[in-house]
Picture 1 (spheres, rainbow, N blue to C red):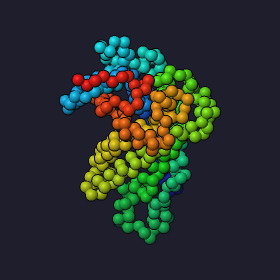
Picture 2 (picture 1 turned 90 degrees about the vertical axis):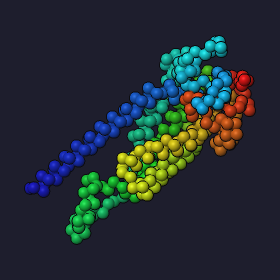
Picture 3 (picture 1 turned 180 degrees about the vertical axis):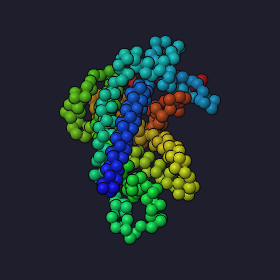
Length: 349
């Protein structure tokens, strides 16, 4: 009778923890959606800059270190320009709003959120199937008889409900979940990027989700839904691998606490992401390449053979980091090929 009651209490405790974890996960995901929605106009502006859209010419100015350079308007100075001698202090989002209205600042938000929701829901489920959870020795009923000793009991007490926190395959499962999430969300990511890219050529091709799906399916086929996927996956793979490696080496040889390792992981992730940012630009460009949008075709964008060709040519032109900085945006030299998306460059005096 006592064992039955104990088992019943254990089941109730497990159910309570499951419910609490589910609520916490839902709240965290909801908070991320709210933040994504609020910051979407800035993401919109960043995407246009990554595509090379610069309607306002750079001006002679100084960098944060005092060096003279041609300065592009940052995200918090962009606006409609009728008289270039007086540049209104408007945000990029205000510039978009002045052209398309308030709702225009959120064009492409629907597919982006839908992709995030589907990715969050299915990625972990698929990852568990691809990389099954490895059994612990605590699951063996004979362990509690012959193999039980003080060290084993202490190890069990440091675990959560008999589940070892650090098991082989944990990093692999995390990477698999991330890859699955990217693949699931990418078709919606493509639609969202192309909806934003319409701002450059003033088209109305990608107006809604279903019409956008039909447009891509008819003119590009299934491959169109995964345009720009490879550089995005490559960037995420390198980021996860390098960040995890740095955190592991720091924890192994420095012996820092769990909190300190968390800070190291955050700093490493930010640094590695900054270094790999050019792949983000390449992915955005290749997402638009091949569509009927003016932003993805000459003369506004060169024709690239593949994403490696895009990376090399952007790097040669010094355009592989465009959009990486919100402030102090400088240009080293005028692009090799001017097009309608770039305002003429003045001389540096």
